[in-house]
Length: 269
Image (tube, rainbow, N blue to C red):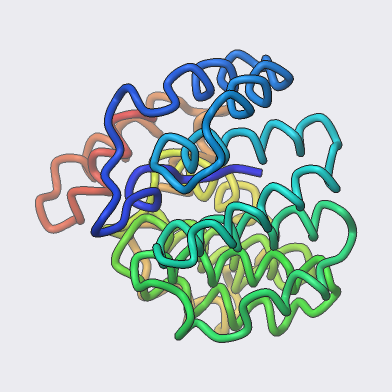
């Protein structure tokens, strides 16, 4: 499961330094999951930034190994240790929810945090995305869509992640038009990761051929996304007329009225 680590692993009282749990992080990136657990086990059993950061990687490493019971216990223990630090406690409650879902218990995971008011403001986007994923796993896709939609309103990169998840939920359940709309919207969003923009771009190109552009209801949806639509059309041309595709992209990059985030993304295509 992918995790965004930039702004979500800090609180007002805990700031990470480059050296904190550096070995555990490096071992995890290298795929040495048993080594991550060994490194974590050597840290004193009391709440600290170093232990929390290493524990974050240890839980993920255990899940990679399929050791869900052990991962769940660690998430519970660390959440309990960090009752005085709302941000770190929330981080480990999120891990608890993820592990329960991986264990095939999404319904139980949804009961861990039932109200967004119990989540620190910086974590709300992640909460809505995680809750949406759990609802999807529980077969409640319409409720998942509602959760993802709430997530699109946050002021960090989880807004783009939520919009992309929304597109996937619609596509999976046979609604190509709202899926296309959501993918196109990601392209010009201020808050979206580059990897999510790329995935939305690929999704929009694929879905473009699944809607009837001649239908009035389709035109009504796409009329508000003219530049994003041009990007998808350029992507579709890449395989047949690369020169024309590059021309369209170049014109969009040169248009200062287009959001900078989308122009910067176009430079990478």
